[in-house]
Image: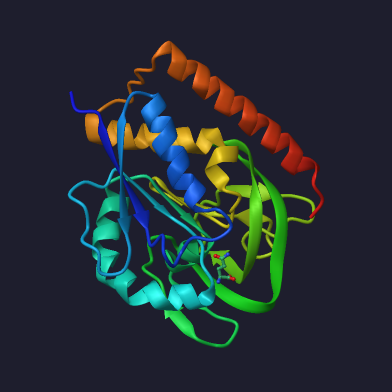
Length: 249
Ligand code: GLN
């Protein structure tokens, strides 16, 4: 049986801030430790779409970066929508999370239509929402990361958030205590960090969904050394999670 898993890194040139590319490295590393053959396809503007897309990862970006990639994103919208409906796992952080919604109205009044994979809209405001963030997710337990955005995102009725923030975390909009969104196997979130190194449960969700869709099942084949390495990485993640939770905003 083949063991290749094709990872699409969406717009790494323009949509990659606060360490979001660490998410791609994390998926690549964990896949290899589970005995799969990760293949990374960087898809920037005008690049061809790869023959296989098993998991799609996109990062955040400034408003200017979002304006740069938007036309290319429209050109790929049908492809991305079809893959999302077909259960391809995707993780979209901040700037791309906003553009996976219906629209983003920037603080200077520009309106960027999104590609409506996630039922949500975003309105920029002049106060940025910045800081470490802990949210509670039914699916993944405590999710830990870092937010830095001006956009306030509001989910449509019935759209499931990724989690709930407490304390002084802002999350989607600083008003309703929601953070992120989940549609099919698509996760949208404001969590930078990088997110995945600190949240192995989300990494493994994306990997499992990718393997199941492509091969019918997730079958890790780890050598003893790979199992030790996974345990070591998870211990480091645990320490990073504890340290981040103690840091004030
Ligand atoms: N430009 C968007 C905002 O500030 C996204 C920022 C980001 O990706 N961190 O709301």
